[in-house]
Length: 213
Image (cartoon, rainbow, N blue to C red; front, side, top):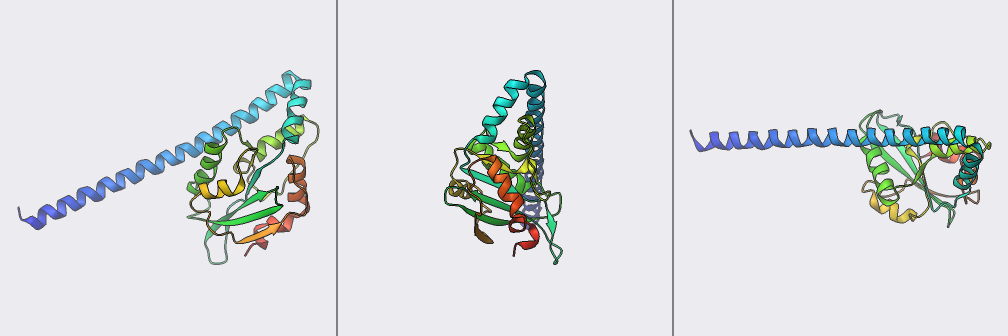
């Protein structure tokens, strides 16, 4: 067999090995995203069980969750298609301490692309395993008999409140969060979930996908 034939065979082996590795990696990432979904749903179910079994205790825990101070908040929008046929979503990073919100555009391969979500959620749980999702806080608000809502373009299970992680530290932990598409100032003094929800609802257009360049 000639040398060039051996080279072609070796190149083929390398390519096949790389493709197999990529396939396993994507599978693992998708499985991780699914496990995050299960974890979130399990927590939501636990909230319901506490509220039903011990109403007074449930309300007390709910009040503490809703009143807890916020160091960083992440509001992730649902995927949307641009006029050019590309898919994107927005990640709004709230810094209540200095009353600033940095908005990042995240490119997607399609409406069901989960890899960027893995980067966002993975970095959250790596920095703060007990971080609460907007979905969980919404459940707690019902337990506390203070129901709150946020705009429907926000992904509740992909948006988080972090009590101990600085916004800039979080941004640096996610490689694709480089340059924000815009920086805005909070019109509401955001200190906890109640005031965060108030900011999102009263300044709907600020965070809507239609208003971001």
